[in-house]
Length: 308
Image (cartoon, rainbow, N blue to C red; front, side, top):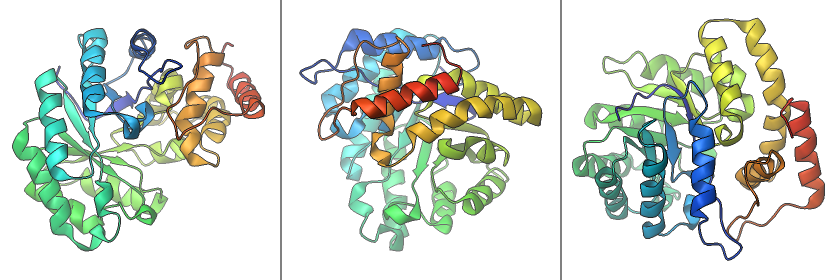
């Protein structure tokens, strides 16, 4: 299906069995639950939310194939390209294209974390290799500079100029001033590059800057609220936006508290509390949450006026 880099794009989770194998039936049900939300533009699989760091190549292919079979006739699917080297990234890109993905979300290679920002030619070569391997539209995943994986502003402009299949960035710069600069600059280029916010811990503030859309793992739980907030902010209906944001706020506070790495773990536990998943299993080294934190998640769901 045709992909448009705009609107609300949830990133879905993956359910596991007690032996850490993928629970295909539960994962497909979760995907269908999210896809049934009215107003989505696309869905992302094989991203952070699906614990991509713990997936083999074969499992990535299986998840994409199962996802396309479940909802590929309803929404375009964005597939994550998570690899430490460009050659491996090309293999993932080719696989995703052959399976039928509509777009690719390109993660920064972890191999660039020790000074790669000083070598813009590395980032440009990475995107060129992927673009040469597939005609699919690409989304550049922008990390915070503090991680060592964020692309400098000028490097991104070079990538956009030399790799025209880059149509958007997933912006996790985690810097409001820089985020606004991305939106105002990239969305005004002669060849527009859209900004998809993933600043879900301060989403209403981000959406006030008018990015073209949002791409977020929190959509695995609250895609409907994200749609309502995005639409309200697009039409400058601040009264409605505040009401929706007041419901999102307790969950954002619960999802994105320290340690940050447990955010999708917490989302899985919320799906169990909501009756949408039977069990919340994560692959090690991630570990199940303690009972007191699960109780706090339940309080956050109640505060968000979600039915539990």
